[in-house]
Length: 411
Image 1: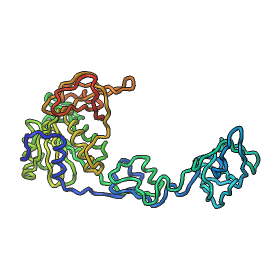
Image 2: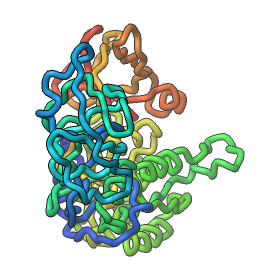
Image 3: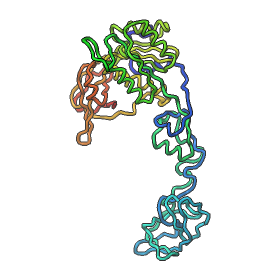
Image 4: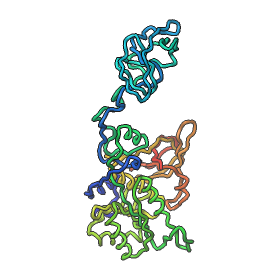
């Protein structure tokens, strides 16, 4: 058993997991309307210019900018009107110097014109003459052909998570289908003789299954396909069959409650029976969450999460979440996109030998974020409900002083 009971930093734990997996990310083609929050598996290249023609951004008059020089409210200039260009029409007529063409917002710019005078800066003297009371500079109020994106340009890069505005942009360049990475498939197995279904009334010594629901919800939030596999009692054969069956069909198997004293040996025995020397690590230098198990069997990642709800959530956010993002093709490196800086409301003391994660409630006072530690044992549920983020205290740090600016990973 490699690295058994040797506490590893989170970064090393993740590196060991990824270096022992050789599974190629699978892809699929989907309609853009179904692509929200999916991860692109290839660059999206524009096969045309956007916009496809130069167009006006305002209602007004297409002109040569030099014909408006010197125009003001006290000394306007006058131009003859030579036609009108409506939205959706092709501008086939060339604008002559000394003339203006009436134009609608979004309409095509006529050949020769280099700027648009806003209608608010004009007044029609007659059907054939317009008064202009403000000079315009070259290219004013025009979006030029290809200004948004040129033909052959990259609109979206591989690994990009698709947002609503991206879907609109894809439609704008005529892309109706995109290639994305398939969703990461996650199986969640809860273990323990004391665990019962939430619909049941617990007897003395029993507790309702919390972790299956919280962990599954976190995975769903990341866009995974999730299967809640129910509760497996502390029976080696039952756990062996369940894990063996899930390895075949899932990318990640999360075992909740199988890493603490009492059930730890059973989990390790099961994984070692399925594949000898499959335990790659047992223990992370974080608090809470220390007794976490890592295994890779047939390119399926297996993680034994601590049984305490707070510990399992800390491990999920610190370890499982970045692994899911890497496996989904979203990130090239580990980082969090949901961090904020807040001022600590009170002193906190940390375990110097481990990274420690404190549950905090982030509030805002006078335009400043305040991180209030929610103190309590890792098994308490209410601390999780009250908290909206995690504050990390690094290795070798004995604590953080009140009013220090700290980084908080928001839920």
